[in-house]
Length: 299
Image (cartoon, rainbow, N blue to C red; front, side):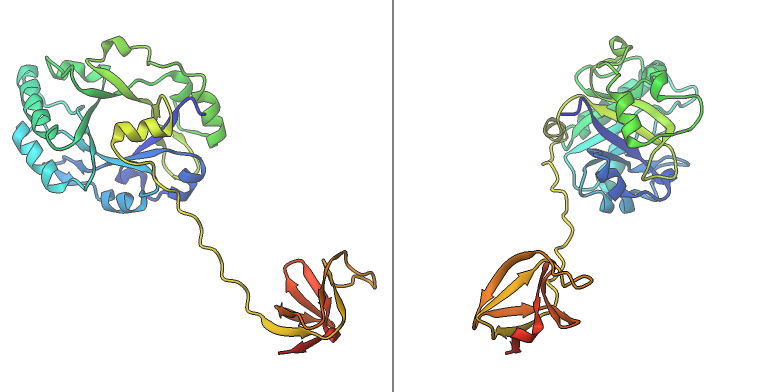
């Protein structure tokens, strides 16, 4: 079992993403930005597209809290725009100049009290944002940002998923500044906007869950998604023929340079066989089954 489950948080700035590549890499979950707040609350332009394309992952939205309006107004917007889900992450990292840390904390508390009546709530933040609120909720799960150098290089860096996993297994839980977190750290954002990986043309934020996929699903409050299987191709068209020989040999291939293919079985007189195609006097019965066509009669 992997030491960590990988969760990506994504937003419209990722542009185009290949969710199939993420699935193949074993990514467990996607946290999708619901809104931005330039000039007020606005939907992330890519939210619906990413949400619709991510049903094969554990998925939930993250909501950017807007300190320019009160807690009730933040809740009202979230309640009106959130998709059907059990989990919502609340991103608290925006500084409002000259807004008192006491009032910021008071309005966030009001918002969280309302939101927790409807969803499982966790708070995204990091140590460098703690000064914005004079009191942070201690009874709330945290999605905590802390970036070890080995997965947060100074410049954008291309990695394969295998290289990333090799780095991740060297990280120890919890983050080194965990004592500074006001509550319980459940998800760790260990890298932000630095690593370029297959599936996205932009750098990705990497988040870690310390346990199994099933335990992550339990925290999110959603069942483990069923990975869609590719459709089974229809069988090739065939034509029924009757065997006219007492015993008809079935070979793995038609003759090659006069050498018969490996014998793999036989059919008796009167049997019906399904012929996919005829080729140079031989009949193909299956991807690896051929016989002499002169001993067949079309039904």
